[in-house]
Length: 575
Image (cartoon, rainbow, N blue to C red; front, side, top):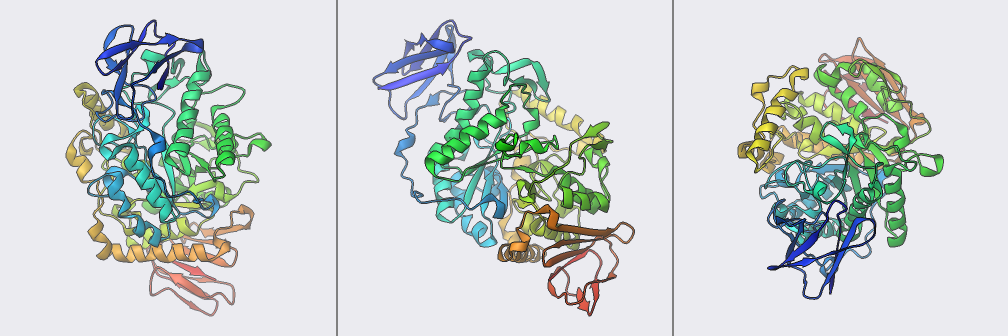
């Protein structure tokens, strides 16, 4: 017997379509409808008919949408999968090296199963945690996943539920932890039937995507339950080791217990129950340490968050770009502050926001934050999706890699960054509704005016060519300059993993010196010094006696007594 339950307080009548006959459900407490069906089996397709309106629509908690966001749901038996990772335990996030990837463009085939063939490469590179961009069902066959609507259903074009489980199981067999990017701050416009069932959105608050998710209004207890249960499902049924929470600044919640805190409490309880290390990582634009402060210190208890200020400071110094939010950055002083204090904007005035922003990070480890040069947003939200390898010299790329991989934060790489992939990562969609597709294309072109980019240069997100050109070309890894960049990343990762000074998260032990005019910056971490020449011309600096050259980006880097010679756009690691 199979028990069907759906929360639908907006419905006056609810029927289950299973096979060819509708089965009425009975409404119980707090808007939950129920029916038990003897004949229902895994693999059966079903949907719900609300107030007699046909066709049937998907279950909000559908485990599989084999025919896309508008098709029927399919029953899945999660207990049937033959897991082999019984004794698996993820390595701690404090010593992690994270690798963000997009299933559709990571391999030519763009599936969960095809990704497995590249796991040895990631392990040999030194990656510890694979972070997968959203995989829940979204419109069409190609997309980033941030406009998903069926949050419980792994995307059908990637291979569906069992294929995702095979990928996670294979990662664990290779010693790789797996993180999943989830989107709880909004849902996509196509195939979004949630409002037919209940008040999942609160019209009193608005976000860039429309009405905010209902986290503190009437019926919000059940809405929060929907998202918390989704998070627990990824841990329990798919064995993920962590979740990356998209844009938590868009959670508009005045509850006594914030949604993030509730989520952290429930994930911690599951970790205790399963005796596994489970983590939550936030993307936040708030510059608010409360997000990652422990719950017993009255914080939300999220394990870590992305460090956007470090990215913006590093990117703007290297590229000289000052459009959009980069207008707040551009100096070595700001880069130094981000390395030492995490937030550049820690209560000071932001020209971009036209207000004071953020508050200081006090008493937190650098390993509460992820540091990166690239991620899907910072590449894909450029007009043409160009990577930093399209903007910088090889020497500048090596400087950036050294600061990311040897800096005080948990390092994160974006797919292909480690070999300076030539393929862009552009914004692509596959909306079947022509009106939605047209609106996405036009909106995308309007979006870039503040950066000074030509709207006509923006690739059409709806074009299959935009998706195809974003796929990695793995043949490049054996060719120059890609091979040299890859070797540099491998050497840096090996160095980081071999020395505890380079994984120590104590920000009080970080010392940064710089010269704005000469354009050099020196980062000291324990016995190691990362000396960077951002200038295109060579320079010589005095160093402490006894320092030796461990690794350098240029063969002309040299130490002579207490003098360090750095060619233009170069970096040297001293010990």
